Image (tube, helix red, strand yellow):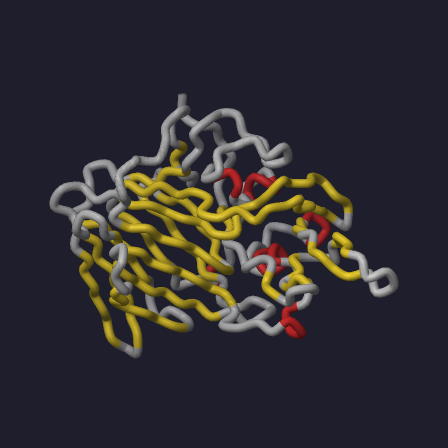
Length: 301
């Protein structure tokens, strides 16, 4: 089921959200039950070792963060983020403020949902997930959520199929965000199972100026430059998407700066995938990005 599109011209609410959620790493997000909630499929068996971590904090300007909970490694049961009592019409929106959007030309709002890699749109068909490799997962429900591109990785980024460039995108989203605005009398309840114990954490509506944040990250704990190298992030996802044969799979190639060993001049190059490190500074150039599975649609009129 698709996320529900925001209306044309609609902006994100101007008030501070009560909860921000940030998604990093090998996660597949999809709407469910007519966009009443979001399912997050967690890739449990990637080629390179990734570790799932979930952390909830309260942030207050000028004060240290208050960390309420942390989990590490595979979920032992479904992790739920639930606004309660549920609003009359819960919905997960994808932030698409205008009909006009072009990831090739770079024409679009900085937070537009369509900066996020959408594998169902790329392949122009619904895709089945192998749940034996992604469950238990994460369920987000009970309120009105806005999903958006929280951070874009500047390009150009080449979208290739069988080594042939199909599009050159100006940028893609490397981190997905979601905002929740609690209604009067609501609170957030987190539930999960860890070490054989069921846990429940209530987060009250924060005081003015404060907000709650949840970080969901399925990435390597640490990746040395000699270990990461260049590899395709999308190839990892195809490991849990059995409907896509090898010849139809896409790859993203990011440019990076390198030194010409002869002239010592800077070069811009791309080597077969999402190169993890910029070779001059030895710093990471791209995190493992999350993606969505969402049928393409335009904003509601």
